[in-house]
Structures are given as C-alpha cells and as structure tokens.
Length: 301
Length: 221
Ligand SMILES: [Zn+2]
Ligand SMILES: [Zn+2]
Image 1 (spheres, each protein chain N blue to C red):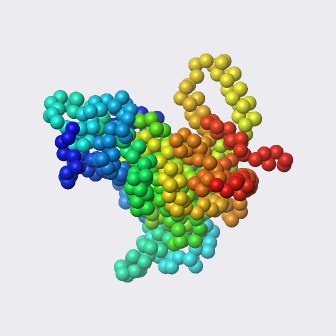
Image 2: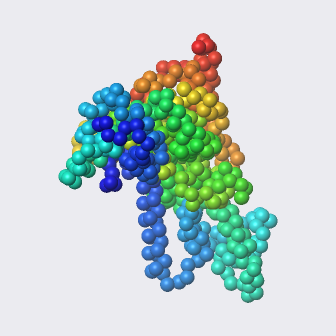
Image 3: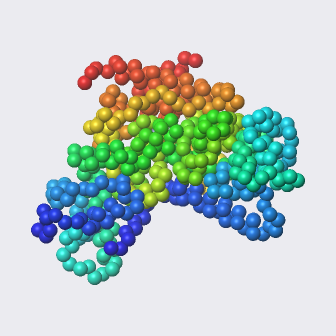
C-alpha cells in the first residue's frame, strides 16, 4: 500500500516542533561552521555549551568568572573547587591531578559552571545575551494552544542544584511547562534559577506579550489604540497586512471551553469547568461568547 | 459485499492504518460498526469515492484499481472515511470504553504543565469539520488544550476525534476526572512576589470563589 500522506490546511501547521527543531538545526549548523573555520582548540565553556541538551546555556565570559566577587560562596558548595575552576578556564595545572580524579573534577566543573551561569544570566550582560536567544525562540514556544506560540524562557523551580530539572516559563499564561525534548530532562533547573525569567521581563517589559499575566488587557486603551491605528491606516492606505495580522493575533486571548455536541458543559455538572480561574485575567472577553456569568466584584476597588 | 464477513481473519487495512507512527491516538473501530450502514449516514456525500474507500478499509476491494491517480485518491478517501467513522464511534458506549482504556494506559500522552504532574491527556478536535485543524490534547486536570510533543500528531486531523469526545468521556466515566486544585505557579524575583502578577492571582481567586458559590448554590441533580 502506498504511504498515505494528506496535507492539512492549517494556518498553524508550521508548528512548534518543526520550528524549534529548525532553529536548532540552524544553530547546530552554525556551530559546526564556526568550529571548522577557527584554528584554535575550542575552550571548555564553548565546548560545554555546544553539547546536545545544553542549547539553553549561554557562554559566560571568562572575565566574569575570573572576578572572585562573582563566585562568592561557591567554594563551599562545589567539591574540588580549584580544580573545577581551572578546568572551566582551561588553565593547565603544573601538577595535574591524577587521571582517576578526572570524572569527579568534570562533575564539579559542570556544577560550578551551572552555578556561575545562574548568577551571570541575572546580570545586565547575561540578560541581554539571553534576550538574543529568546527573540529567536531558541528556548521553544509555549505548548498551550491559546498562547499562540509565545516564546518561553528556561526557569528553575529551586535555586538549589540537583533537585529539579529545567522547566519553561511562558509569560503569556504565566505557567511552567516541561520541555518536550528528552535531552533537556537532565539539565538542572538551578543552573537557570527561579528568578531569571521574571527579572528578564522586569528588565525588558516591552518583550512581555500583550494580554500576558503581568500585562493584562486594558480594554479602554485597546479601543483607543485601535481607533488611532485605524486613522493611521486610512492615512497610509498601503498597509502591511501581515503586520496587522500579527497585531490582531497579539491581542487575542482565549480560554478553552469544553463542549459536548456544541453545548457548553454546565458548570454545576460533575465534569463541568472548574479551572477557568487559572487562565482568567482582567479585561478578558471571549470573542466567541461574552462571559456574563463572571461576577462584577472588581469594580469597587 | 458479502465477502469476508464474520470470519476470523486479519484486518489488513485497519491494522496497517493503526500501525502508522502517531496513529496510536486512534482506536480500532469494530468491523460490525463500520459494516452497519446506519452508522455511516451522510458520509457517502462527504467522502469522495465512498464505495471504493469503504471496500478498502474493510479489505473487500473487488477490482484491481489500475489508475495510480485514482488509487491514490481512494487511499486518501479511505483515511478520511476511517477518521470520520472513528469520530462517530468513539462517542458511542463501546468506543468510549476502548478509548478510556487507552487513556488509562497513557496512550495519548501527558500534560506538559508542570503542576499537572504528568496527568494523562485526551485527544480533541478544535472543529468537527475535517481538514481544518490538526489534533490537540485536552488535559482534564488544568482543563486546557495543548499541542502534542509528538511531531507525528501534527498531521493527524482533529476532526477524526471531534470536539465532543474528551468531555463526553469524562461525563460517562467521572471516576477519571482528576482532583482539581487551586495550586498555581507563583513567579518570584529573589524570593519576592511580583506585584502585577500577584494582583491578577488575587482576582483569579475571586473568580474561583464566585464559581464555587454558584456550584454550591445549584440544586442537586
Ligand atoms: Zn503559555
Ligand atoms: Zn494539565
């Protein structure tokens, strides 16, 4: 039998999986290009960040690591601290440790680099380097359908290493997700930390998607903007339709409504909606149905 | 079409179809269901080459199709026909029973939301019209829909599962409705809550409380 292939007329068909993988392929091919043109041996940091599964890491500049102040307190957490630090900085020891110690040193170097990374990505430079990756959706996009491929950021659930693997924070729904690719399963979330994505959006508020949890919908402002835009449109005439499409998409905010044969499952039934609050936000108006059932308790503040 | 009915034999086409990677979302539709014309009402106008397609999925294609183009068309129609029959079948009692078994086994995957703790999900369509949107996954714990992490699922039609299926399943099998909690992720910067988000959370809590009041006030069924 011939292998059946059918195409789907889905505007969202260029989906997140392909997108992420494409980006990764691009990234990897760039990598190999770089390494083939450079004549010198790559540094430990460059090597470490190019390993499969390490795509979320950025390269911490050596100057940052060389500054003792930035490493404050790590000596007590990381075993074989000196050896690990030398490994990260590619410093050759005059009396190299016995090769049997190498696996332990490697493990320590990984831990030390991860903890330095956790600190570095909270600095101005670190944040802006992460921004380059975020803007290209290198960390992937939110798996939630109604987040419309919102790019996510790596996030830890604890700052203590060795506890929980890395998660992804979506600024649009304000929730945490498990990365879909298995290779991220063993990446320690502490190497990104609990603070990073939130400090990131505090630093770059313009990158918060509209209708996101920290940037709720302001209907009045929206209407004003729309009026203004319409006026501008009339003046300009030749408008970029793609760009308009993006703007509409950006404004859309939807909550999924379970339906049986087209009818909303009644709230009071056992299988009725109980989690609407989770995705609810101020100013939310469904395009499909006005939620008249919402209590009017917010007007009195 | 009295060919090969009732006897004990392999279902070549259906077995093949179910063996395709990504098709683990589908269940096997009983042959007796497919052969009951009553269940296929209206599909003859919706599916091109309906009769050939039906013969193909029941392994009873009588004539050899010479024309490669036509054969290809028929194969496409067979997928559509099986998909649309599947969408009807899985909301029958017997279909729901098969699907609930797959749900229990986790054949459909798990919710990507961290706080859902690997809750098993159910396939769902965003529309009942075929060839509009690919299949999505519904999580009964957070009551939201997600893209599948399996790339193969992105070319499976959502209408082959339909918009009703997961919700009817949970209504028929309420024992599979997970406990839904008020747990949520709280973003923090150096241990401190973020003002704007905390405010939204407070308002979400009010929405929750109001809905619980309405539910409690509702008369018992
Ligand atoms: Zn999201
Ligand atoms: Zn969930």
